[in-house]
Structure formats: structure tokens, C-alpha cells
Amino acid sequence: MKQLIIVLLMSLVFFSCKQEKKEPKEELIMYQSSEMAALMNAMYEGNMTIKNKILAGESIGNFPETYLNIHSAVLTDPADRNTSFEAFSKLYIQDMQQVYSGSKDSLKQNFNQAVNSCIACHKTTCTGPIPRIKKLLIK
Image 1 (cartoon, rainbow, N blue to C red):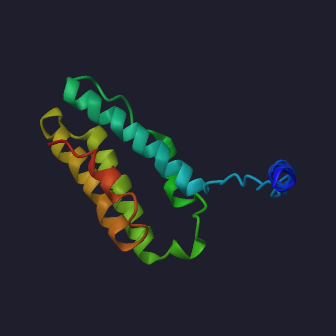
Image 2 (cartoon, helix red, strand yellow; image 1 turned 180 degrees about the vertical axis):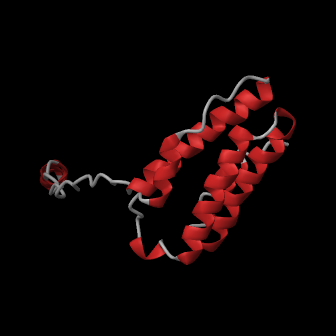
């Protein structure tokens, strides 16, 4: 009986020391955003700054010319650059230019109109950012 216990204990020790096979490491794949995704992220940040300046009663400066890259930036899916996208992007630029050229009294209204043009476009394609874009609206 004593030998059986010793054999069991030795077996337990032996099997508990068994090395586990290591799984091959997964390679990290870095996501490279498209030019358009990067531009839209920059426009979001810029518009958040504009919103905060409007709320603080500060000058918003000049129209950011980089916004015009919306007409040429490479999309994640090039097939999304269709007539609808082109119409919405032109409308967005017109609305943003109105924000910068309109009167101070209509600044909030013009800004919200530009944000709503973003939302309208995203309702047709790439709906994911809509909740984030809505945070730009000035209540």
C-alpha cells in the first residue's frame, strides 16, 4: 500500500511537470486607415474644436482648406465614391463654408446644418459614426 501511494505521488509530480505546448504567437496586424477615414477623423476633431469655440463665444478662425480633400481622399471602399457621396460632400463643404462666412447670429444654426449634412450622408453609407457625429450638434 505504501508503494502504491509513492507511485501515485511520483506519477502526480511527473505529470504535473509536463511542459505545455506553446501556441504560436499571433501576429499583430496594424490597421491602416484610408485617407478618407483619416480625413474624417481630423474633421471630427476640428469640428469639436469649432463647437467648443462657438460655445465659448470665441472666433473660429478661417475655413480649413484641408476639408476640401473630401473630394479626392481615397475611400476605404472606392465603390462608395458615387453620385450620392459626391452630392453630400459638396453640400458639406458649402455648409462648412457658410459656417465661416455667415453672420455671428447664425453661427450655431449654420454649424448644426453642416453637422446634419454629415449625418445625412452617413445614413446612406457607413452608418457607424453617426452617434459620434451627433455629439457635435450644439443644443
